[in-house]
Structure formats: C-alpha cells, structure tokens
Image (cartoon, rainbow, N blue to C red; front, side):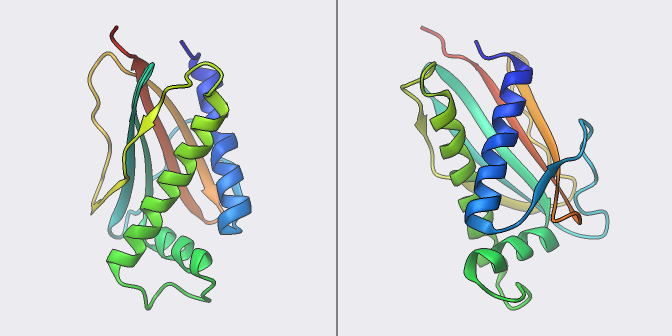
Amino acid sequence: MLEQMTMEQTILDAAREVFETMIFMDIESAGSEPQETSPEGAALMGSITFRGGLEGCLTICLSEACARSIAANMLGMDSGDQLSLSEVGDAVGEVANMTMGSIKHRIQNTYNDLQVSIPTVVSGRQLFPMPGEDFTRGQVCTTLDEIFPVTFSMYYKQAQS
C-alpha cells in the first residue's frame, strides 16, 4: 500500500508536471489545509476514478475564475472570460485526466493494472468529495500563479481480491 506522505508528494509532482509543461502556470504547495476556493462565487470540481490493484478517485477543486484562467492558458488565449462554462469545465476535466495520467505513470511499478475513467466535472458552491470510510486520503493544497488556491485530493484503497 502506498504511504500517505508518498502519495501526497506523487500528487504534487504530477500536478507540477501538468501545470508547468501543458498549462504554463506555476503551482506551489500551500500547506496542508484547503483554502476557500471561491468565497465569492461558484467552484468547480473535476474528478476521475480508477480501479485495479488500487481503487478510488482523484479530485481537483478550484474557483471558476481559476478554471477560466487555466482554460485560457490551455487554449492560448489572453482571457477566459469569453469561454462558456461548458468549455471551462472541459478544461478542468482535462486537467484531472492529465494529472491522473501522470500519477498512474509514477505508480505503475507498484500498480501496473490501473484503469482510469473519463473525467466528470461539477459546478456549485462548497464542493467536496465524500468517499467511503475505508479510503485513505492524500491531499495537496496548492496556489496557482501565486493567486488561485487549488486542492487536489486522492482517495484510494487496496482493491478487494
């Protein structure tokens, strides 16, 4: 079984790889407590599930403003203000997908049979995942471009044989 601290470092390393190479934004650790992603408005949560020797889900929680900034960077735009919420959601889903792909690559020596779902994105206020009690949580709180709080959470457990 992966140790929680190892998983948290894996999540952070995967997020850095995705944001620095694919989205061209700086991402830094911001401590262990999640920051309010959007006290003034809507938040988005992208999630992607996985199964195999390890099962669970990865979630990314961020403000709509942050998601718009990410989408704009991904599309080479100056601003994400003109994008529809659906387009912004697609960008968040793709970030979840790329981050999970990077995590999968990093843990493949231990869990080489992981199957990953397509990402899902929801919008609302005060969003948070609610897995079962027997899941371990690896959580990484980050700041994107020294402005936006983004929380990555991975809930996982050994698969039942």
